[in-house]
Image 1 (cartoon, one colour):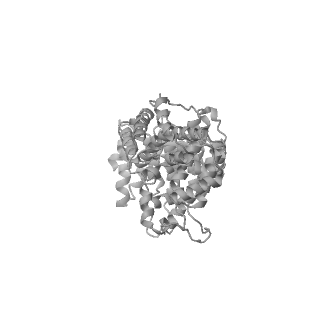
Image 2 (image 1 turned 90 degrees about the vertical axis):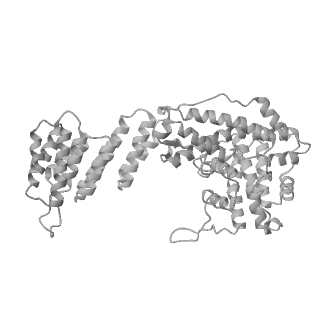
Image 3 (image 1 turned 60 degrees about the horizontal axis):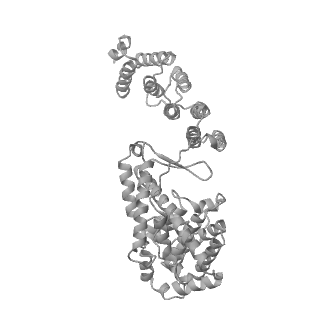
Length: 492
């Protein structure tokens, strides 16, 4: 250790000197060589001070030495309650917080203060200084995404250490970011689906009666396509994309604020699958809306009661859910797309809940302390329905449309962010409601008494074991478009 200290006068780099002193410190501590401690401590303080005063930033030299110094001197004996920290070490800690403002360095220094200091005021001061460094980085940023990143990091840090005044200020600044400062980039590609392909498909809905056309609609496959195929494409994209391997992904909500980050491999995979599903939904939403428009242009629309009665008679489904489906269809045909979506969305959840209750699944959350007794939300109930064999293609579609990381329409509508809806969205929500509403049997029906039949219907919601020729053709073309767009999104 004496050689390590003597080497401080040698022709070594600052970093090498720091490494030697840390090595000396790590030897004398467990051996309790208190007589050698002052010389090592003096050398460490001298090196930290000279480095902080130098023009060249050298955090790799300073931070390891500061950590050793802040651990305090060896105690006098077992009865000693407090290790003595050199006053210079505390001064240098705050000098370092002023000097090293990068987020990882500021946080590391703040954690040192929290772990080593025993003065609450000094700890609070160090934590606040680290949070201020993050906020300062946000102030210097001019681009919206960079400013958002720093304010988010500052807000998370402040909330973690109960600095609620700083947290509130970060959130206020986050909410006030000018949307025009975000440099969004839109990626487009030409669709490989020809108008003639769509027309050929929509002709399937040219039936003699409206009810016959609706039967065709209710037999169409999941608008997001095959979950298995989407996952295969997503894995291939991630494997071939350096961007996906090195960087995380963050999504922004309809409110314009950051909503969720995807950093782990499983999160990145789920996000990529959802991106593919979203592209598929965009295509299929247009086709479903074209089919509904074709029906309205070809047939006389019956009253709600007549349409609901036909649904109950044809499918043996719950009358209340059938009425909601009928009302949603009439709102669509009346071009009131927002009302259509707002009516149909919560009834999807009601249908899922009805099926789980029929299957005798214990879903109700009983009252506990201050938590009210209530049924869980759609995001909790869908996995339970999956457990009973619900078709994964349809389960994925409902998640992609109504939940996060999908379009999250359920929460947007519930919290007042869904101010408008186009016909494609309305058509997709109608399709989501129809698939679960028609599965939920009327309580007095024979089907309601046969749980095995209910489970079988869950595994094949449309009643079709095989996808028809036109569906296969359309999804084949759509899959090519999905893969093309997704691969472009995955490029660095």
